[in-house]
Amino acid sequence: MTQQAYLVFDIGTGNARVAVVDINGNVLSIERADILYHNDNQYPDARHFIPEVLWEQIAGLAKVALSNVPDIQIIAVTSTSQRQGIVLIDEAGESYLGLPNIDNRGREWEEHYSDQASIYPITGRAPSALFSAMKLVGLRERHPQQYQRLNRFTSISDWVTYALSGVLSYEPSQACETLLYNVEHSDWSTEMCHTFGIAPTVLPSLIPSGSVLGTLTSGTAAELNLPVDTPVIVGGGDTQLAIHSTGAGAEDIVIVSGTTTPIAKITDTFTTDKSAQAWINAYTTPHQFLIETNPGITGLNYQKLQSIFYPNEGYAMMEQEMNELEESQCVAALGSYLSSAKNARVRGGFLFDAPLSDQLSRAHFVRSALHEIAFSIKVNFDQLAQVVLLDRPYIWACGGGLQSRTLIQSIADLLGKEIRIRTGFEHASIVGAAYICNEALDIQSTQTEQITTFQPQSSEALQKDYQQWHKAQLFFAQLQLAESATTTSSSESSI
Image (tube, rainbow, N blue to C red; front, side, top):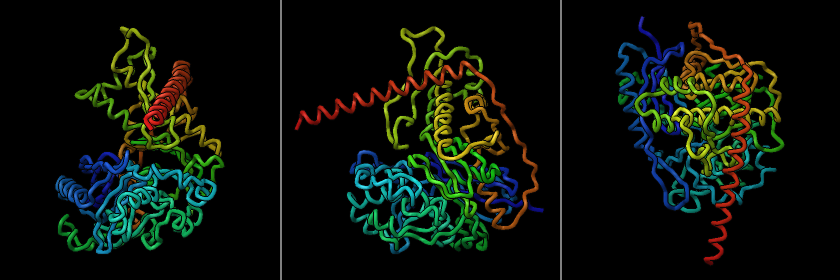
């Protein structure tokens, strides 16, 4: 019997992946490529992509991924993507502009939409340039012609299923990233549309994750060499599908280690945070929510350091050299922990003794960055504990950032919790997409999954490094304030 599998499109922040994954969540073939972004000099920090170019890229990846496993039967196609990213579509149905999650074109207008008291209880997040409505505000202010062309917009994952099926929709776990969605009531918010000056007519119908959206268009079927009656399944946000892959249920806590590192609790009850720091998200399961804190950019820093210090050896050599280290020789401050805006650029670096110690090695730099991920998870876990009860003795974890056992053990030690990881954790969003398709088509997985556990241990050295890291954060925060004051003073003097 021909093996059945799914074709999954996964559009991340840095790269796009297309995978063939079987009904048991085993990745049979995967192809990836970097996404091409363009800067916009009308803003201090704006990025966009061209949808047509991205589609050509991922369609090409799909064809290669499929050619690697010619004997597989594709029984459905779905997609997942970075959250907060959107694609704009005009009246003719043409996708003409893509704004990724790293696009901050709305930052200059944040102060005009700073009323957390009216926005947070509805949207489950404090307004910032990270979210889609603010991207549209920035576009409207500087590129009115592009904005006036807008007829509809949708998330990147829903744009992929639109390209596949010709049916436009918006999935709730993605819709909650727009600032135009009422998370508690699971519907678009007319009030928020009015607040941001965005016409409700640009919002597509909400279709839940796991719904059969339609089938492949004749053109797409021919392009991918798949049957025209192949079902297209609604996917969802990459964080939600990654969490789905763990099998976690209500009241469980999950850490997703990727470009950023969401720490989330699944709950049946809509809950808000009085400090408006935690995000309240829609989940892929109807009538469930995710309460999330997130330290921002984490894993991306680690990947970049790997390419700098270990360009030829890879992660295995990094892990070996880190395990041979004794005392720490430096402290990293590379993330956005100090900024309230999760995608803001801040000053950072490494702190170490001068003159340089003979013991200082490349492994010290990498381990300090790895520890920073664990430390920022600890801070955000404690922040989440101020909002909801985190009493489970275990935590599920997944994501490509967890390929280091050193990192996983550090998280267990800092949180004092057992960490549970399922097989396939490194491709969590893709595996979660496959499980969503199983549910849509009423297919039962037959694979017995292996779970690896990491027990918490006492580590005085790690606690000492944690305190040093806090001091490093304070140092760079003061440096940032000093530079800002100098810049302001210089600007005032030149007037």
